[in-house]
Image 1 (cartoon, rainbow, N blue to C red):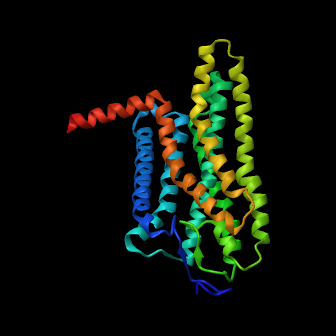
Image 2: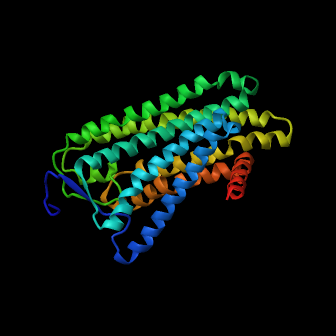
Image 3: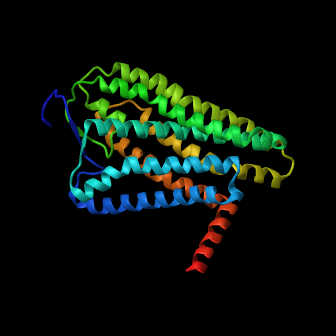
Length: 313
């Protein structure tokens, strides 16, 4: 099957992060460490927000949703690598491959939308602080989060619909560590014009550029308001409240640009694999680190929980 020029595939072979045998063991422990650290860090943030009433605020509500997304994203992209290292089986069925691609796609879309909602929250907090609790009430926060989740689920459906119409592939070996859109487009021997147009229209304009534009607009108003603050301490304090979010936004959009918005070619798969690994593994680690290190409240709450745990032991 691997050598056929045009064939209908029932399963794919995931090549993995590297095909060099001497690197398999180090890569396995690296991926395992990344996955466990990502899962543990985001789970800690999620539970802290859920169980500590001090963090029942709009900013931490969205952060809990972001942590949940990062846990799901790391699991759906890294679990195949970990399982194949243990079992030696790096195959995945056609249906499971498309399902994995769909789940990853809507999680990524959700993350961009949630970061946009978080930028709006920071905009209201800094530009309209007196009415912050009136505007960002519980109903508004739940509505924004629900819309983000639903839009993410719906936005990826057209891609899967088009992929289901693909009837043949040049090979069933995916040069990646999970099922992603770009490697499948390279492998397909069908006309991918419609999928490429969809990627440029919906993928770029709706899923990526619109959230970026809304986030960028929010930060124009935020920075403008910060510069109007008279005292240096006030300006530092205002910028400090949104610096964590801004750092995550810059990291994520930079990686997405390098990963998806460059011309697609067989030679770009190695670099795409690296940026995918950074996007799906490193960023879920950075999120809890950035937010916890930047927030004195989070660090204090975590230390208190650790102390309570030691006392009970």
